[in-house]
Length: 53
Image (cartoon, rainbow, N blue to C red; front, top):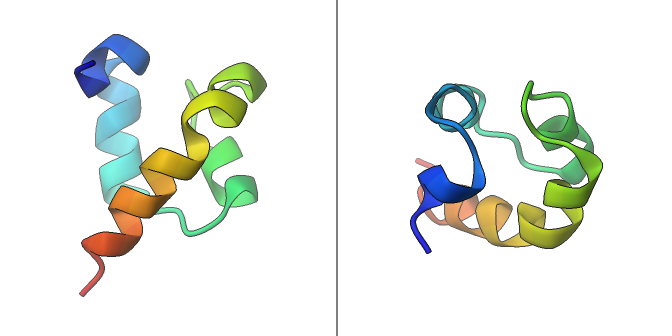
């Protein structure tokens, strides 16, 4: 499933800009609700962590 189906582009841009490293940081991003955080948070955080410099 493409990421834009899960989160709006604005939310994806914010996730890319802020690069949250925890659920609590990710929860602060507008557009990330509790249900999506529970369902997709770990996968998104893992991908973000893979691309840290």
